[in-house]
Length: 143
Image (cartoon, rainbow, N blue to C red; front, side, top):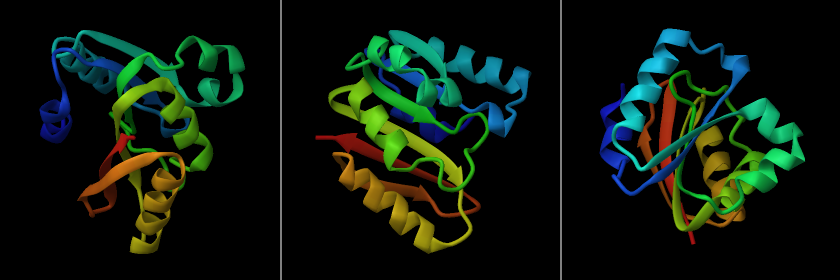
C-alpha cells in the first residue's frame, strides 16, 4: 500500500475508487487496498472505469457524492487514461473542494504536461506531481 494515499485519507472522506479491468488488478491486492482504505474513511465505493465511461446511469448515481477520487490503485492506469473525458466525469462526481489522486504509467515528461493541462481544463486546480518515476502520481483539487 502506498503511504502517499494513506496520508491523503481523512476520516470524513467519501471515497470513489476507480479501477480498470484493462490493468488486470490482482484480486488479493485489490481486496487489501480496499480493506485499508475502508477502515480510514467514512465511505468507500468502487467503480469499474470501463463501466463508468459507458453507462450514463452510473454517472448520474454518483454525481457530487464524493470528497476524494482515487484512480490507478492497486494497478496503475495506462498512460493517457486520465484524459479530458475521464477527468471531466470525475470532477462531476466530487463535491466542491473535492480531490483526486491519480497514478498511471508515463514514458515522458511531455505526458505529465498533458495530464496537468487536462486537469486544469476540467476544473482541477493545485496540480501536484508527487512521483516522476515509471508510475506517475499526482493530486488535484476541484475548485
